[in-house]
Length: 119
Image (tube, rainbow, N blue to C red; front, top):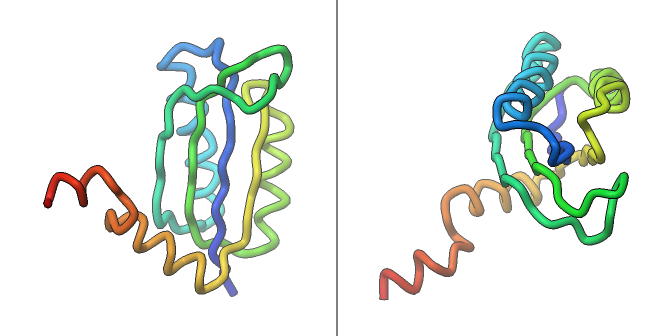
């Protein structure tokens, strides 16, 4: 039985673009190798942190939305803990309401700029 999950992780800002993309691909490969099915992937880019982490005030944010077996989450989180490029990560199990919300968000239902431009 698979469940819906969303994982957001923050990579250290000292990485080059190539290193950052390689780290993202590494975690994407771990997901795919363990039969996870991608629903959505978003690169939020370099953002300011709410508070310093490891003496750094910015980080590269990445979001993965996927379906996977619940036993796989421990494997994924262990890989995040082992990688020194990852400053923080959070995996959330999504219920049917969160999945519906994410579908609307991806469709642009909450994008104020697009709505204002259409007026």
